[in-house]
Length: 116
Image (cartoon, rainbow, N blue to C red; front, side, top):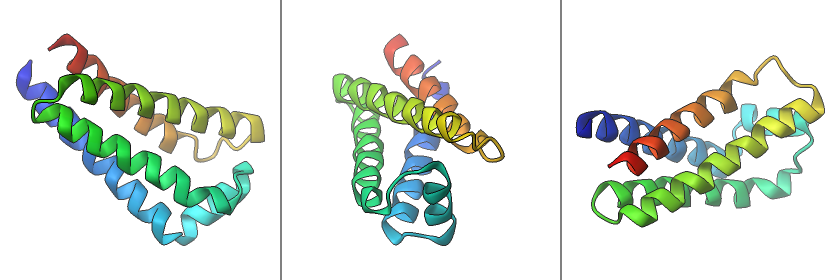
């Protein structure tokens, strides 16, 4: 079980850190997606900061600060539930699998952290 926790959490950390990096860079696909779902571009640095903080919290949870890791997992789950809601509200379904995958990965990391 510990190996699964480590593998899933490292994957969640890397995925969220990479996503935050692309948000900070304002990559073309990020700008296009945020425009399509109705998220103002001025929010991108704030959203990137939340993802980066979540990734950092998951990492800290992995190395010993379990309550922080669980809190970060809860925050990221709420973040991606909001992302899914934004996609549904805007009726943008062609790429809803991306926030769905992040949500599933983060839920998995959170469940494994809580089970430890």
